[in-house]
Image (tube, rainbow, N blue to C red; front, side, top):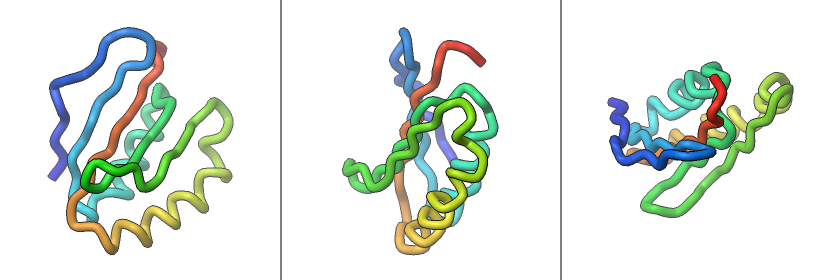
Length: 91
């Protein structure tokens, strides 16, 4: 299941990490995107960045759909990964 890392950086662009199984990856990324204050989403496997979603206001719509489809294909191959989220200070 999803676990959050209590070690978050404070300041402009707070960071959080979530450990998820491959089967929950796409759902968790969608959930994070819908929160609205996420600036970047980075998917890591064994400490290496696999995919990076830079999110800006207005880009979350149709432009993110192809990346989520690719993420779905990648998640089928992963058993465990980490989602690093960089948030803006504004909700």
